[in-house]
Length: 245
Image 1 (cartoon, rainbow, N blue to C red):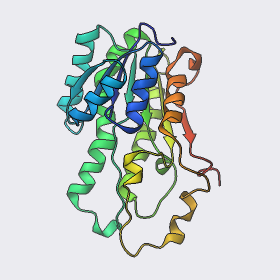
Image 2: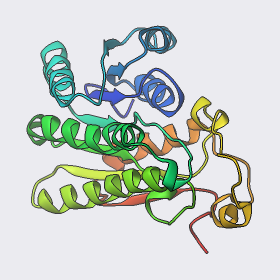
Image 3: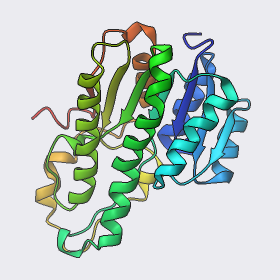
């Protein structure tokens, strides 16, 4: 029960990594506030977790990010853990990326993390809390056919490091987890455009099976716990060796 008495706000809680993080933290005593745009999936997560507070909203709206943090604190009186898990991914030839596709990628993957952090930090400073952002191997290496996605996750990496430095003289901790392929609906439904050069993709395809979302949740729980009190500014790879060579 590492999180007994702690309150965690998790975005993307309706499925995939977000759902498993909710279930793991709740199983260890946390009071969880789950956020997602899909109300049905969010309700299913709540049921699986034995009942949690939830809020339906669009993370691309900065006002919603602020309101969600306020709602969490109003409901539970405090905030100890912020998990920025919500994300999207797509593949395309860079010359085919529309303005709308680019803006959506950055809004969900990067902007939402910033605005949730901005709203949550005053409360996290009061509880000596911590932030965990879900980055990606794509944020630390160049990848063909996912330029906008790589940009967005690279922004998450630098957000994490920069916040860690700005608050290094406090007890607030800011870290990121950088997975490669994770066995979720997002990855299983991932499609590449026509006429790609698969030789260019070999460096980041890897040689091992995909990571399971429960593995990400277990790592998340460790980093969020007091057992990792010395960790801040870390970008923790869990990518089956994709970024080692």
